[in-house]
Amino acid sequence: MNTDSFIQLTSQALILCLTVSLPVVLVSAAVGLLVSFVLAITSLQEQSISQGAKLIAVVVTLLLAAPWGAATVLNFATQVMQLALQ
Image 1 (tube, rainbow, N blue to C red):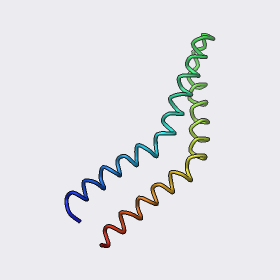
Image 2 (image 1 turned 135 degrees about the vertical axis):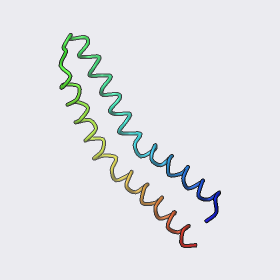
Image 3 (image 1 turned 60 degrees about the horizontal axis):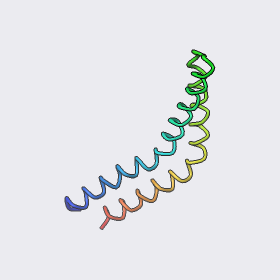
Image 4 (image 1 turned 90 degrees about the horizontal axis):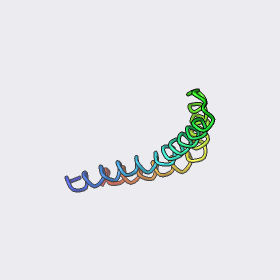
């Protein structure tokens, strides 16, 4: 494995990390903004409501996106192993 292929695999791994984590980050940010907006409108100062809502949303998102993320990571790992054995 030469330097160019190593750099290419590293950049693909970083993009894979971003791609796999993106659904959870987007859902957490969207739910956090929505709940914070509702709490600001109702003048509530309770932070546990926001944290609980984000926790539930992130867990649901992880359960839904886990098969896709695992398949993507497994596919990448298979490609890396095939390149390493050549």
